[in-house]
Length: 128
Image 1 (cartoon, rainbow, N blue to C red):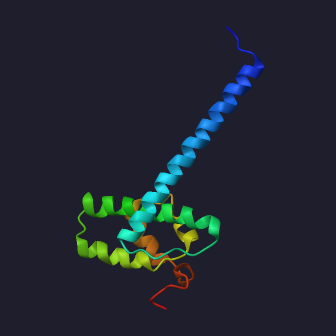
Image 2: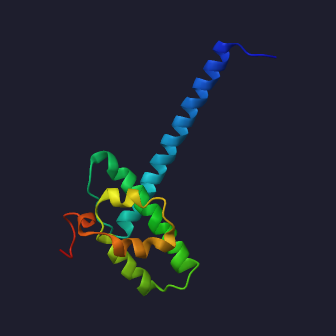
Image 3: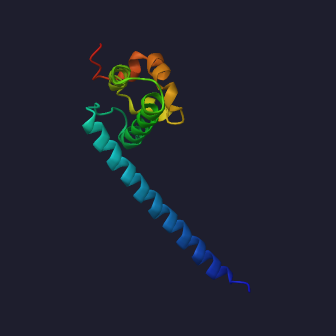
């Protein structure tokens, strides 16, 4: 049985709309989790273009969570080691930096933070 071109196009368009709705819902849930996490762990508000802020928040949350799992939960770091890394992470206020690191592995976060420049710290940097 062959479906008509019109039926095929309608099914394709409906599938695209459902994917877009699913993706929007997923992003909203990720954003809500990232903001709750940022508040819970006293992370500073990110700086940058408006369209990058949400993405930066999600990227920071995902990378920090992956790093904690790899270094503390599954690794040999203690809470003092982690607290030091968190302080370095708090200094990075540029949303674009977190977006640029979104594909990084959690265990690499300390090295990435150490390589960050002063420009990545933004105007909130307490170390300036």
